[in-house]
Image (tube, rainbow, N blue to C red; front, side):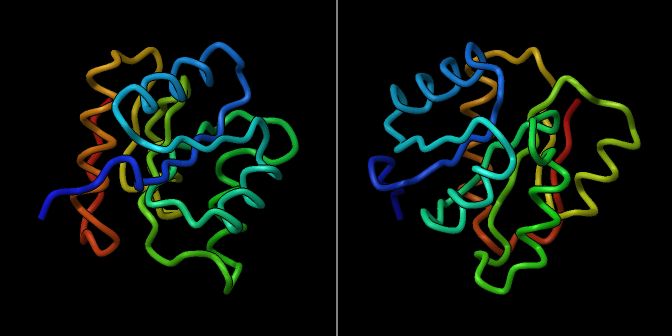
Length: 139
């Protein structure tokens, strides 16, 4: 079964305007519908209302960090269950990776990243679908 990218919503939570623009542009050029927020509180609200197929989530954001976003989604009964989340951050200590995975992230990508690497990882998240058993982590 082929995935129709134009109907595939990817939610991006990133506070840095240049990084956000880069990610949204790359996703849009690849044919995805890219939605976004610039802080953690907006991200929770946007994810709940848009019910995206996958999320790209920065850790360091104002209002509520990426770990807090994952915690809020996990605690909210209205949140999509088992939604694939990729943490994309400059923070890449083993503790950050472990914490992200414990909170439900499926993947962890360190900044800086290459465009092709980002798109490959998004495609992998989507192929794995909502019931993938184990997260994939490459740092």
